[in-house]
Length: 176
Image 1: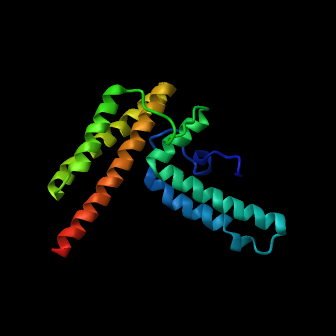
Image 2: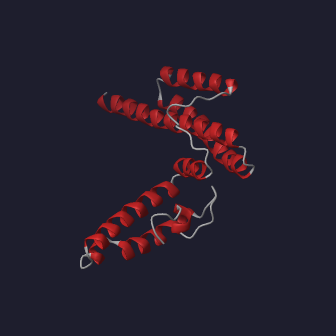
Image 3: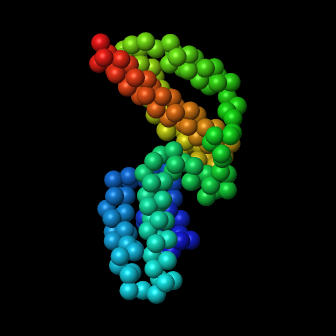
């Protein structure tokens, strides 16, 4: 096992979107224990450098595999169809309209109840997209998988913004 192993190979998982996320933690601990730089303190400089690189690689793999959006990005990269989530656009005009409506609802949200409803809608969208991506990926429909991933990015950002707005509103209410 080395730096050329895929993240899936490193963790002993089949390459795919649906994985046993609970199995990541014990394997991550085991890999960290085996490759921790302290265990290689007596090695020569090249061995120590390799241990540092492996520890960083193991951490990057763990972070990527446990996050569904990062995992989807990685899968598309492995398949030779990586995207730049921040720079690419969504072609689905219906989704773009929905996106504008959701943003408008967030801008106009003035109560925790309104944010709760908006959050539920956005979470439902995200959950549906998380179910759609593996279908697109398995079908090797790369443009659709990339589009689904872009939509996932939007919904994740929206959910984070809803949470930030919730915290702002809660702070305002606490001050009253």
